[in-house]
Length: 102
Image (cartoon, one colour):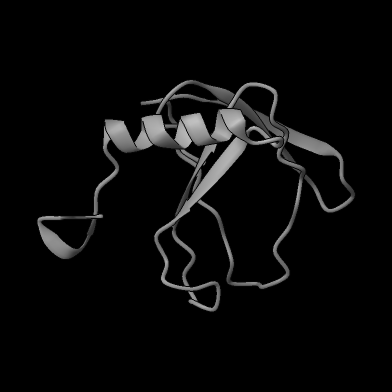
């Protein structure tokens, strides 16, 4: 969905409502909306709607130049980071307008 410029993407309230409805109906309680054209695209841009009861398993991307930006647009969730041995390091509460964004 474009807004203004063809390369700009719009995340509207209606679109977020749709994602949350889809997430609520999903067994994993989440839904993904990919903005990248294919899974082979070197930059993966997506929004993930999470509903209460979902669990995102700790994971690491094998690429050295791969990172994730996580911003809560609605609601709130906790996020834990781990060291290389799997020991919890930091815990963040993510909610709209919270800093730091992780």
